[in-house]
Length: 198
Image 1 (cartoon, helix red, strand yellow):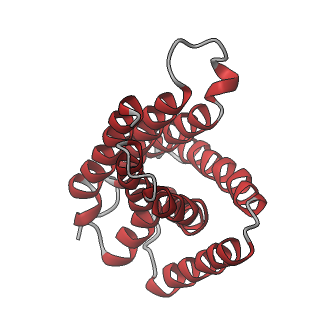
Image 2 (tube, one colour):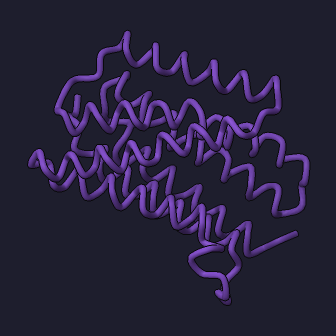
Image 3 (cartoon, helix red, strand yellow):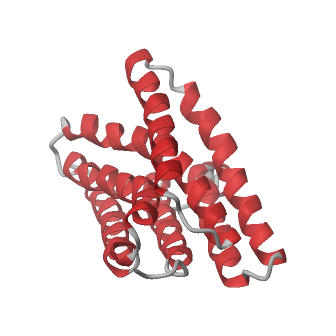
């Protein structure tokens, strides 16, 4: 049992649940689907992470499954929905489903081949794209949306590389990762609430 990790993963889980009920469930189906692909995948991974850190080690398989889902399908969808939000364009169902399908194709490739590098490549493309979209939002007059997206990306980057940014931290790097990803989800939720509510 690793209690501090379980607590930090529980905080991450609660952050994802909060974002879903506070912001996402009010959106149109296709829009909600795109946000959910990332936010709920991270939330599910964290939930099973809690179970794992409480001593049921088999839960790691399910947690990793959802981590990969967030890193592929979720990443694809996050880029698209962020762009459409900043551009103030409606989410067309056909385009949303195509992007989800493409994400699942990459996800299936990773699952069946075990090629973990693909996840890194997708992240290396998706995260900077969302950052650029956020910056584009600032210049386009969508300052609130742009700021939320930028903050969400910054929190993700700090979470991913917290060992580098804080090499001598007294805090556990896994816990820092969970808390920063929780902040990232809240930021993306802040951006998502600017969609037109159905």
